Each structure stands twice: as structure tokens, then as C-alpha cells.
Image 1 (cartoon, rainbow, N blue to C red):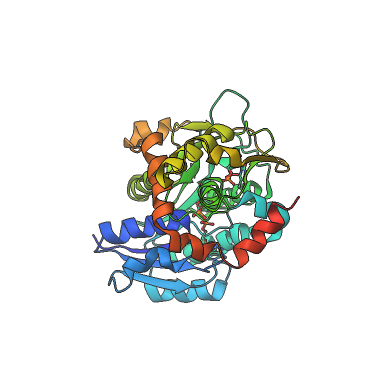
Image 2: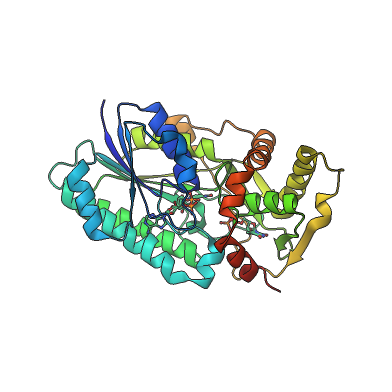
Length: 350
Ligand code: NAD
Ligand code: TYD
């Protein structure tokens, strides 16, 4: 069946992995990628799609109401998968308003435009909002986030995502807009901007730079291979129930220090360096303000209702990730030149 689909933020990390997957898998869909191309967006990720007849790229801002209206009139979308966001916690601490503008205002404008366009003919339409487990707050040593866990965002990033989630639900309850929300744990894999822990560590090992570990390094995250997230998004877009929320996770918890040590060993091995050399670069630095201690996801609902579970195990996923970054040095060098250096020096000063 033909569908016309709007993906926002499709030039970012999760977005470009998703766009590559959908354009290849659904040649009969028309897929429009709307992305502002901020520092985190990179058309190089999508180069192989140049010339694909079922794919269109539009450079633009989700907070531009006029542009959204034009796009909806031009394409008559059946579905939206909304990923565009400011996504880095550390940046949200220095510039929270940018997160309000894109994550909150941008989402509400997109909801409003979809509602206006679909009013009276909601059948077969879906607004699918991609969110994060960080909206649930922080866990102690035990326990998991379920879909019933009350929201308790604690960083400007998670507060902006929580706010956008609330608006998405409000549009469902108030206006009957068909929506699905998924809340996923930390993704890793190709095309992640090296401000995030895993690509930052691989890149710094390569360059022989210190590996900054915030605080005591005992903070815990659940890591999911980005391709597994993409498959969950594909499944939920087609089979998720309107009005429902689904948690997505890797069942793969790591303390930051243990993960960084593993990445050190894998990267030494891949670079042919002597065992233990990268670990010498580990440097404990000032903690992130308000740092959430632990995230862990109970993904039982999507597993029992739709049969999704992660396919890529930690060992294979981390190994593939190290090898992807080391084999894509021109990508890494392009995204870490210029503005990245200025960001890095400011973020990790003193
Ligand atoms: P990212 O920062 O790599 O990419 C964000 C993309 O959005 C970029 O291409 C950027 O250019 C674009 N963008 C930013 N502001 C925009 C605007 N105003 N208008 C249009 N485009 C804009 O982020 P990501 O890691 O790919 O995350 C994508 C989505 O998935 C986000 O909504 C994030 O909250 C969510 N998510 C990410 C993870 C993760 O681990 N990466 C986990 C759970 C949920
Ligand atoms: P990050 O990749 O920024 O994801 P998030 O904060 O959204 O979970 O960080 C993952 C974990 O790694 C988090 O506990 C913060 C920590 N971290 C460091 O210790 N050093 C760093 O330089 C970065 C970027 C993150």
C-alpha cells in the first residue's frame, strides 16, 4: 500500500538510520525528510539515497509554522515520525531555551498542523512521536521504567521531551489525533555525533586524548543498537495502537566506567595497539550537574504485544560500532572539525 510519510530530524543519528531503513524497505512509500541541519544533522549520512525516487529532503525548521503548512499542502502526509530534537543533555544545561524552542514549540506546531490537515479524516493517519526513557527520571540500584512510571524529568533536555510527550497525549485526548509514543533507552551505532559518550570515547582513543568520565563513573545506562530501535519504530509505526505508549530498551545495562574500559580494549585491538594502552587515557572529570544515576527499561509490553526484542547483543554491537567509526574516518573528521572543537574545549575546560 502506498503511504506518504514525513520524517523529522532524519539527518541526525537515529533519524538517518531510520530513513535509510525505510527508503530501502518501502520503495512504494513517498518519504519526506524535514531537517534543519543543525550541528547534529549531516546529509553525508544519507548520500546513498541521492537520486532515490521515493525520497525527498527538505531543509527546514519544525518550529516554522508556515513551512509546515506548505509541506502538508504539497505532500498530503498519511503519517509522521517525529524525531527532530535538540538531544544532548550537556547542551541543554548551557542553553535550555533551544530545547524549548525545538522540542516543545516545534512538536506543538507539528501537532497543530497535522490536526488541521487531518481533521474529519483521521482514519489511517498516525502521528508517531519518538521519545526517551529520560522522561521517567532516575532509578536507584534496582527497578525498571514501565509505561506506567510517573514522569520525573530532571534535566532541561528530559523536561523538554516530557513536555512534548504531554502535548502529544493531550492532542490525542482532546482532539482525537491518532498518536503513538515510544520511549527508548540510549542508542549506539553508526552516525552518532561524537558529543555522546560512545563515539566521543572512540574518537578520543584514536587521537590519544583523555577520556572524560563524569563523577565516579558508576552511572548506569541501558544501551540499544540503533538498528534494533529502527526496527521497533518500523513495527510501531505499522502496528502500534493509537493512543498507546511503548517502552523500548536493550536489556543491556552498563556502568559508564565498565563500558569505557570495554571500548578501550576493543579499540586497542582494532588499532593493533598494545593491550591496556587506551585505559591509561581514562580521566575522571567534574560531574554533570543533576546527573541521573541509572536508567533501565522494562520493554515487556512491545515484546509481548508485538514480538519485538533486540537482536544485536552487546559484544557484537560494541565491536561493530568501534569498527564503523574507525573505518569512517573522513565522516568522523568532518563532524569533529570547526564548531565541534570549540564546543569540546568549552565543555571539557578545567
Ligand atoms: P540527533 O541530535 O543526532 O539528531 C537530531 C536531528 O534533528 C538532527 O538532524 C538535527 O539537524 C535535527 N533538528 C534539530 N532541531 C531541528 C529543528 N528545529 N527542525 C528540524 N530539524 C531539527 O538526535 P538523535 O540521537 O538522532 O535523536 C533523535 C530523536 O530520538 C530525538 O527526539 C531524541 O530525543 C530521541 N531519542 C534518542 C535516543 C538516543 O540515544 N540517541 C534515545 C531515545 C530517544
Ligand atoms: P550521553 O551519551 O551524553 O547520554 P545521556 O546523558 O543522554 O544518557 O552520556 C551517557 C553517560 O555517559 C551519562 O551517564 C553521562 C556520561 N558521560 C561521561 O561520563 N563523559 C562524557 O564525556 C559524556 C559525553 C558522557
